[in-house]
Image (cartoon, rainbow, N blue to C red; front, side, top):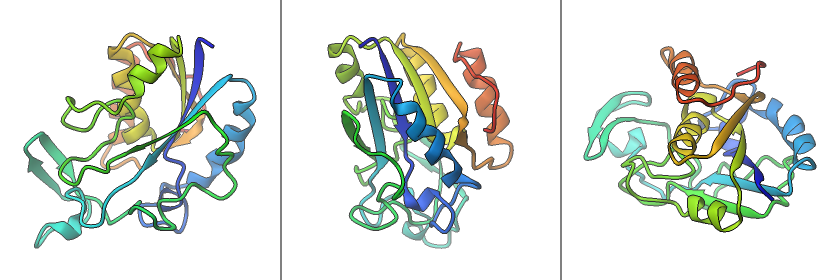
Length: 201
């Protein structure tokens, strides 16, 4: 019970045809499904934004997706509207095995985005994931999913700061790679002691 697989945001809007499609995003589904049998604990995170979320470019006059703005908690990338609560885009990919132990929804607070599975982007508001893992006696985490350079990396970095042993299985991740964000994320994870087995990112 000391190891858990955390499956990050394998949702329709992050897969081909989605509002914020990650190139090859659907290619992670089969390897993730195959990995689940190797873990007694499987946790899935799900982006779950209200309509009009502050991270949407459409919520800021004159702004377009991928612009940068300053929020109370720091610099924020503005995204296309995506993973709106109850929408098809917010649903998990149809072929993903969702029979895990816990589904953790994040990003539902209108005024702060949430990349990490542990904290909102203000780095202060917890999601409750740490407490769940601690009470289950879980110390080692393997992360997979979308996108390598945002939600996967932020989750991995927070987990490492919290003292968990963290592996990111790059073969079961895919990246957005926005202006070099993938290389930056990989370097930050490596520096934080996150294990990064080779494979597609």
